[in-house]
Length: 369
Ligand SMILES: Nc1ncnc2c1ncn2[C@@H]1O[C@H](COP(=O)(O)OP(=O)(O)O)[C@@H](O)[C@H]1O
Ligand SMILES: [Mg+2]
Image (cartoon, rainbow, N blue to C red):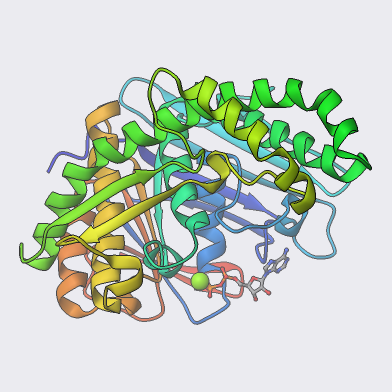
């Protein structure tokens, strides 16, 4: 396998980030393994790498949670080598200010400028629940992937969330349905336009990733079952040329109900992906093993489809996943690991070929082979 062409994080420096005081580290181009007992800072290190790629944490947390307790400022810096140009990303957190993100020493105005610089796929036990848990996880899966490929989508998502919040706020501040009706049209028009972009992109994404997921699933499960995925739009209308018109009508029809509920009951914030094995829905009827295999397949499909679209594999972050998988699945995952620069965390020495870093109490204590 040729690593030369793929993106690589060469160096990382964290200051007052989570339980790290100061740490600078040079990575291996291939496999980097962070080993340590629980609560030492392995996941935190992956989180800092992820942050430099996506501009937010993979945990649902506030930026200030990332700053080391009892300190005011934190920073993460990383240098990545890409196919044509290198890139330096720096994120500076301040307890009392908005974070600053710099690319090659120049502060960026929008986080969208960061997304797509260094693509990443993150995989943790939480993602193993991708198939089983609430639709939130599946929407997050679509959003993080599509946003890295398509900035317009990312901006549209942010826009949609703001419009939706404003529409829902109307229901709180207006005392009568008539007063809602006076202003709701502006939000409805904006919501529908935004929803259209999001829905069509998500549908395209699910269709594009499906063959990769099927291939990965065949590889992991030995080709016993047939995987299928269908994008389920929460807008309640068909995805055709009349989308906007039909969704507008439906919003109007549901207005009284939404007013009573206090929130908007249709829209892309209700989207989901239906996943089937041999036509049986995996979420409700699949065994835990089947659900895990599908989740793993989706993540591996993400790697392959990103490579296909951007010409480069994304970097791969694997947080504690080996402890959750049986030996056979571990071996299959390891075969994919060979394709791109990978960061793995685990609690014990495993037969993983790579550069081993021992992590203890927010310090890398050993940069071994
Ligand atoms: N803002 C913070 N400041 C200091 N310590 C933190 C902060 N956030 C989390 N931690 C600590 O980091 C440790 C967890 O690190 P983590 O990377 O999740 O460990 P693990 O090695 O198990 O992956 C915990 O001890 C937690 O208390
Ligand atoms: Mg951890």
